Length: 219
Image (cartoon, rainbow, N blue to C red; front, side, top):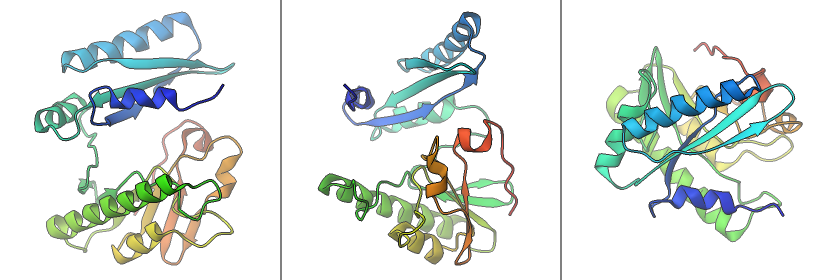
């Protein structure tokens, strides 16, 4: 029976802090072993537990990893940043530089007007709005508004046929010109608004929607 029980692993240390990443490779036992050893050794080097699972299809092997940490512990957060590859920066209520871009973002969440949304979803959505505002404020404080801004979200901020969520309002007020998002897989990419709308360019970057390859986004 499908459930959300696996998500309880993100509360491994009691604070719910987690970062997820999913390398893919050929569907062979040898590649599964090598990927597992690579990620496990890296996480253990920095003192993190290794929580992972493999999902196999006819074409590829997806290696789902979750790095769990105490999100309110400064030492844990510092180790998270140290464990990431050079040039990879986590967004946590702040902003970062990436080439000519200033990058802001938050996870986002299911909008309260979604037919599947509950009261709990509405509370999480409001929290994510505030996190996005904090990211924009940090960008204003540290970088000003002269450079192009890109927002990174997981959840789509706007669904075709519906009114834009309050996320879009914050993006516009925050001077964001490009917004990338994911979450929509399989047949669902058609649901998300893509292209330019109201001065913001929306780009879906879900891995399967872009052919599991890098996507260059110019300012």
